[in-house]
Length: 90
Image 1: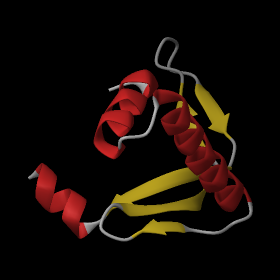
Image 2: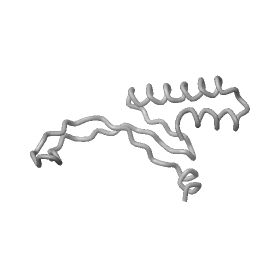
Image 3: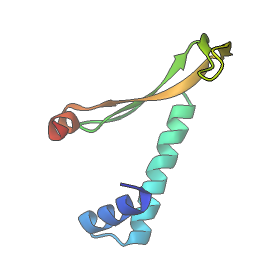
């Protein structure tokens, strides 16, 4: 499902117009992004939790040449599914 399909599904499920659903989705994404940038977690009970984690620097290999390369440290976003979502999927 892509963003347009998600907006359609949100509009159908909520009774909102597609334009209002797009605004709501964009607001959710912006608020989540801002919270994660600020170092906060975003917990949606039953759905899941978004958090930021630090991935340390490490040494990897270029698969084409086999030469070792240094991979710098960076922050990554993690998502842990909530119990309701995990149960619904399995």
